Amino acid sequence: MVAIKRLNGGSHFQGDREFLAEMETIGKVKHGNLVPLLGYCVFGEERFLIYEYMENGSLEQWLRKQADSGETLGWSVRLKICLGAARGLSFLHHGFVPHIIHRDMKSSNILLDQYFEPRVADFGLARIISACETHVTTELAGTFGYIPPEYGLTMKATAKGDVYSFGVVLLELLTGRAPTGHEEEKGGGNLVEWVKWMEGCGKANEVFDPSLTALGLWREQMSSALQVARACTHNDPQKGRRWLKL
Image (cartoon, rainbow, N blue to C red):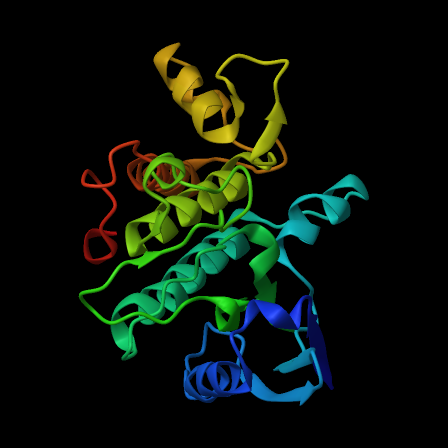
């Protein structure tokens, strides 16, 4: 079974040559924590991508919709998802040439196979850059709530920006909360600022998802993961956002 993604707006690509070259490169990206591109199709202005099908849907579905029905992910599964997604994203940044910046890392782009092994998806739509280049665009890339603060000023997509977005996903895993929609609460209406505000009030232990049983080793792991998430989402991209130290 496969999953087929239809791309909107074929004119986004300068031409078939650009699209085909990008797809040929993406098709060579192989890692156990990335959704592999199996094929593609061009028909006029239409573009279709063919991916391996992931049986358990997206992480976002499990954190939101399934949670509403009483189905939740335990901490051991969440930790596995966190580590696997980090490995996949790190491979895009450091393990493949040319290096790839995802530009839209979020919980809906982390898919889960039948064993709940995470696979980072949609990197096929990312820009491919060399080790020394930074891609500059006039269009805002990413999803509100995951976009690093510096991106709105520089319009530069960077690996450190991906790390910030990953940090938001990690906060979602820890808290069970969406990245936005907290306007009625303290902290500026987003998850990153809410966690920061809770820590400032001495309530760091109250940010965790109440559906998780946080005892003993799990509590230590969750507290450590929270510090990693806070480092990833530091406002200054030069402080804390380093894969090799995570």
